[in-house]
Length: 199
Image (cartoon, rainbow, N blue to C red; front, side):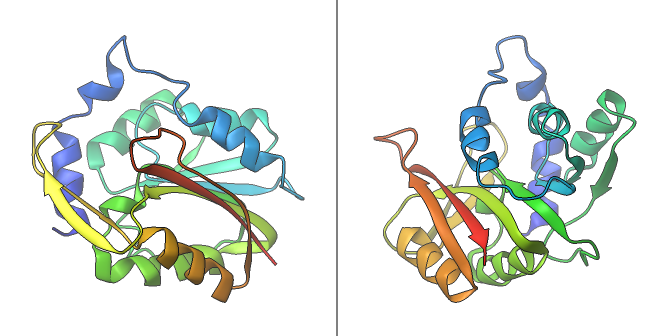
């Protein structure tokens, strides 16, 4: 399943993030932990920003100039309505040529939709887009080994993949990052997140 197909699937389910019961605190404490390692507060990027603006709001309040990118046209349209003063990119992150350098990049509950064979390349692209000392936070499937699957839990079929904890750890270290934090934050679910800082 390619990112464009994932974008079309998310176009069908934007209502899940707009409903009254949506938990806007999801991921915020984890991002606050990551922000503690930041050296500079210039540009920031929210990968798979969706439509809620909760992470972008956090970054704005922390003194960043944030941008959002998402493959879903409907998510981006809703995000632009909510925060018209910000820059948004409706792009497949795997194909998008990132021209800026960022002091902070978030990829919360997003890169696990990237095809398994493209995840390592994407991770290197995101790390290359960090400024020196920049911080990356991302969530992933906390399996030991690499794997992929798809399901229809949210309605349309959606694809998921992960390099696994060992794979992400090796990649980050080899790419010149220091791993600041790893946590199974929804244990016993395999939802895991990393905080890494570019050396």
